[in-house]
Image (cartoon, rainbow, N blue to C red):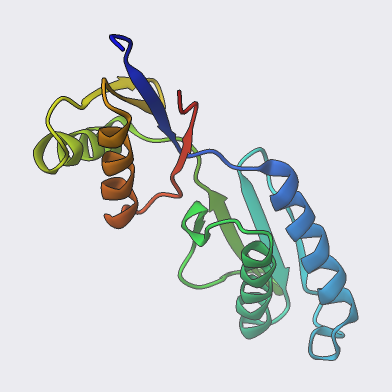
Length: 165
C-alpha cells in the first residue's frame, strides 16, 4: 500500500439551501403578527450578500434571528454569516447587510496547516491549493486523527471535508 490517501478541507456554501432559508424567512416575515406593518423584508444583495430592511431597528435584528433559525434547521453553520453589529439607518428605514463567507483564505489555510503539522500525527502532509487545503498521508488512521484534530479546534470558518480517498 504505497499510495497516499488524502482529503480536502474546504469552506463551501450550499447556495440552494441558503436560498431556501431566505425564502422561508421572507414568508415568515410576511405572516408573523409582530412584523405586520414594519415593512421588514429580506433579499439577496449581489452574489455573496443578503440585505434585511425594516422601518425599525429592533425588527431588522429580529429578522436576522429568524434567518439564523432557518439556516440552523437546514444544517448550515452560522459561521458563514458576517453580519453588521447594528442596522444602519438609511432615510426612513434601517438596513442590515449580511455577507456570506465562502472559501478558506491563505492565512486560515496556513493556520490549519500549522496545527496539523505541530499537533497531528507524523507523516501527515498539507498542501494549500487555492481556497482549499489538501491533507495527505500513507495511513488512513492518521488522516482520521488529523480530521478529528481540525474539527476539535474552533476556527471561525464552516469547514467541510471532501474527496476522502
